[in-house]
Image (cartoon, rainbow, N blue to C red):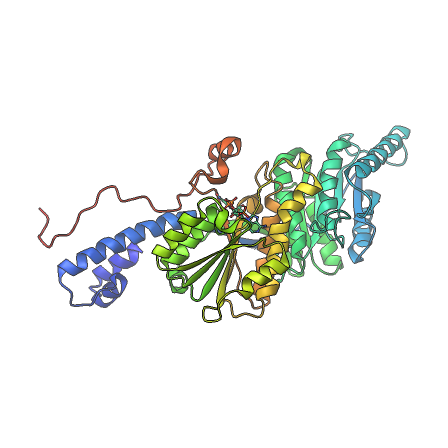
Length: 506
Ligand SMILES: NC(=O)c1ccc[n+]([C@@H]2O[C@H](COP(=O)([O-])OP(=O)(O)OC[C@H]3O[C@@H](n4cnc5c(N)ncnc54)[C@H](OP(=O)(O)O)[C@@H]3O)[C@@H](O)[C@H]2O)c1
């Protein structure tokens, strides 16, 4: 911004300067100086925010076309087979691996059953090795029982038998990570998905639920580095180039432990800086009519509501289970009303589709719903080793079910924004947040799917906010040690301010 400003000064381009400062061209210095001070303040705030902003982009990766595998590879597949399951086992065997296959009935096999079967597979591999059968099947060059584990559980259809909000594939994948540890198998685990991510352009993620496994995997990579392989998203068809690319990744040294195979190559995600270059788009969006903020009385929701009210929102519906009884709700309502917005504190469980529909139906026709911001969440974190299906489902009800309800109930409306609030652990993992990252990774894929379908969608992924929020105690200490600092919701007050009085400063 500064470069643009000084370029205009040097070029004596007063029209550009006047437009930048939003003053008329023939204003006296007494009018220009306050405009300049406010412009400078804004530029400073923007450059702070620019320093905080990133986005994920996918970059083509080098391919290994003639890679071969060695040792015994465990291939874990769901009972309902698809075109990929046989193809993966087949290509691994073709390219040098001894393949041991375990078929999982996701309706029956939980962590304990899986661990028992893995122990059996391990014992058998050990027996083979001791008996010196063939080329020492069951051992790799280091004498470990398995050289690698490939899981095709993520695409399993249906839901967990006792937890309707927990996709069967995610439940089985979680159980496998845990059971491999229980059985003492230290081979690297590769998790395969189909349509969980978008590499950009027209690449529509067909199965956002499978992105849950990407969130889980990014945390597993940090909590179990010693037995982590990676995440690979597959294309629809297991043709020869795709299978060759898969083997190339499995045989790699693990530098790229997240990859998507597409017809045009192999892609890996990269975090890049995303300054607010095109501020006009951001500045142009203003809330009109009604905006629904789920979790609107929570830490993040209240900040979002304040921003909306300050930027001209007519009507805010703040939906949470406790509604007006939530701590601080009444004070927040008064503050927002003072900023000029009409406020409805709705007591609504947004995981309950009928209750959400009722809340939406109560929105006045003369202030129609034009934007949704979904911040509602429950936090129930823990290391992957200790997570239970019950605990995971509690979190996913809000991240997956409520998001789908919001989508379905507003799809026909003319929304200008559909914003999903996410957590940075979904993008690059965070130890201890294996129950936070999956649901948020789902939000990313779901937003990309909506956009591909021509509907508005944005995922805002935050690091910790600086009001003490979710980062108290050990988790907060660890984040700060790793350089992840809290972001202040409001810009700091200026250190000193000079009021322009109309007389020339000495
Ligand atoms: N705060 C941060 O520093 C931060 C940083 C990065 C990302 N995030 C993300 O932002 C989201 C919100 O975090 P937060 O810190 O604002 O959490 P929070 O303060 O605990 O607020 C959560 C809100 O959700 C509401 N809620 C929970 N279950 C609900 C349900 N079934 N139906 C309707 N409302 C429900 C809660 O109100 P009731 O209990 O009354 O229902 C509360 O208003 C999370 O996904 C988090 O990962 C937060």
